[in-house]
Length: 304
Ligand code: NCD
Image (cartoon, rainbow, N blue to C red; front, side, top):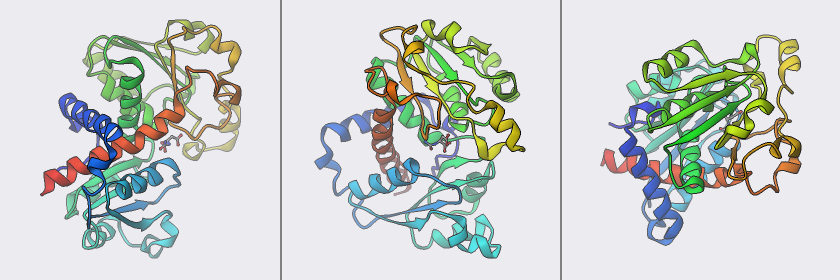
């Protein structure tokens, strides 16, 4: 049975296929309105979420299906000590597919080992977030018309930002991609990711100042500092406003720049940037719903 645990488990051809389906759903939503009739999606969210959970639910509803689930661990039997494995075996008796977010890295992989239905990783700790990457890729493809030949800037909390890790792993498989990694020293990408980039011969540079490099970027992917993954609040307070994208910095960037952010934003993009045509983070929100529709269709078609 197929799952979506890590973006690298899916080939570039398969991911391109999901984007083609999403484009087709956008063009002809009526063709998909009954595709998942009588099917149920369960959303098991052990961590807070707005976009990911609600876009999964909206996606399933737009496909004619139904949704059930919980949005906090405290309202599930996890609060009584039930394991993820037992919860998933249980929910697998009620639902056809499960989207799960969990603070522990690898929890969706553990779930997939016992689950009778496909598991989608909707974010596992500071590790991965493959369906956010699907949203990011579709946004880039629709804005730029391509996923190759791009200079991609990643800015903010590159250590704990799971969306950054999944997006780098996905994009490094397209030709002629290079990364400009912009972060404070303490929030640089994890060592394993640096090794992956070296092994795959993907060019990257690591810098601290956004102003120095913004002019060279095709894509700027902003992220918030991940407060919930810090060991102490003082470090968070010191680092949280390391980067604030404002109109002055946007003036240094190319007219063709695409600005992305997985959201939620805290202070890292000034609200005055929102009306700049290069700001695409709310389009990214919308495209996330279509990519989740495409993914649900693909996983349930593969299971049938
Ligand atoms: C991200 C996440 O949960 O990792 N949000 C999202 O799903 N769009 C980013 C974040 O929380 O900073």
